[in-house]
Image (cartoon, rainbow, N blue to C red):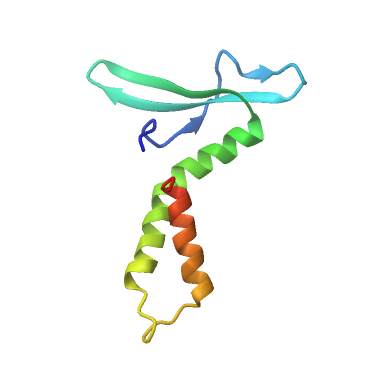
Amino acid sequence: MTHTKTPWQVAAQGKIEGLNFAGCRVKSIVQHSDSAAGSITTTVAEIIGEDDAAHIVRCVNSHDALVAALELVLEYHVPKINPLSDAAILSARAALALARGE
């Protein structure tokens, strides 16, 4: 699975920032990177409600850390030494599968 490099940001200003037709504040989501040619801004999504844009950015930027944490839980879970409930382990496995698009 490939996607635009993180971290993503809610654009402070942009061509579509403002009010949409329903009168809701809208934003775009961007990713900034530096290259030999200079700073590059990639637009990831446009015309998103301000609160939704913030939520999407938070989810995307925390995704890799959450996957790594769940992988560690599953890797080091030893039932007889450090028991976790079956429900917790099943939940961790299900969350990882969802995060990986499985």
